[in-house]
Length: 136
Length: 136
DNA sequence: TCTTACGATGGACGGAGTCCAGGTCAAGAA
DNA sequence: TTCTTGACCTGGACTCCGTCCATCGTAAGA
Image (cartoon, rainbow over all chains, first blue to last red; front, top):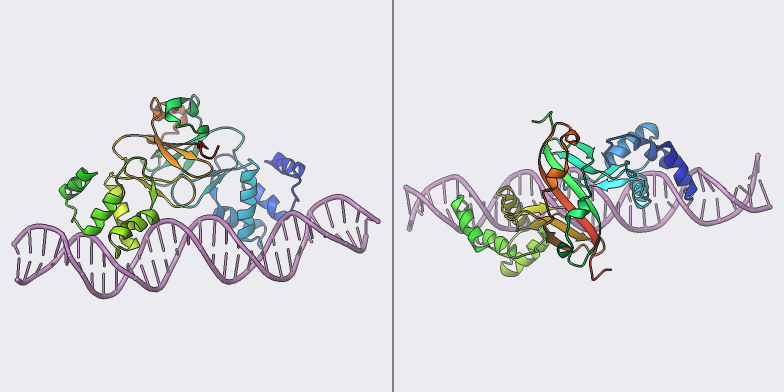
């Protein structure tokens, strides 16, 4: 994730302590935090950071393609920094735990032309659901 | 959908005009209404019906397996009465239009055991995204 | 027809996210 | 180094979606 800061600087991002802290909080594998969780962790490093700034920064990271937005339930969106390796998500129906998973094949290939209704289909988001070992 | 009312009566549902109207509004193919849209249409037939009743009824239909809840964006959930034929969803990235689609093969089969992390995986929800003909 | 428990009502409430006016500061210029 | 300026941050108000609750109404069995 350290190269993320470099990439952002290269894209003309003004580097502020707030943005740095948000980027740092999102570092790691199998990270799927809500905006409020990001805000809580960011607050530990930078007590004055505001909720609005966290939302703005997450939104910018998403539109730059550096972070993926995931909605697994109808509740808060989650932010996944693992944007550069294509993957899908496996969610526990009970506790909500999320894992990144890598299905075989291309999910897009399973949608035949006659099922595309003239859409220019460009993406397939898959959510696998089931009970995790701890909840089973 | 007329047999839906029979099935519900068979399950001990008390048949009220409100429940009947909600079930009727949800009749048809490619129906993916939000709760507020259901409420708006129900209100045309039964002006006094309350928002809470619509939410309650939709929730009951979902837990009875008669209706599927779909969240395609982070916004309002949508309710899909086509619960008895397995299908996935195709969503326009621009205008949000939704179509039911039927991919070939079983999406669950694409997740190898080593990618299941011990979960008892029971379901795969796929959302295909792209531009619809009108938006392209 | 009577009874009663299940269902409906609507208003208050809570979580998630957006918006905005005003204050602050990163980074290039001198 | 200091200055300048426009991009950025802040906090609070606001909207949207959904839930909760006390009270009232009514479907359906006796």
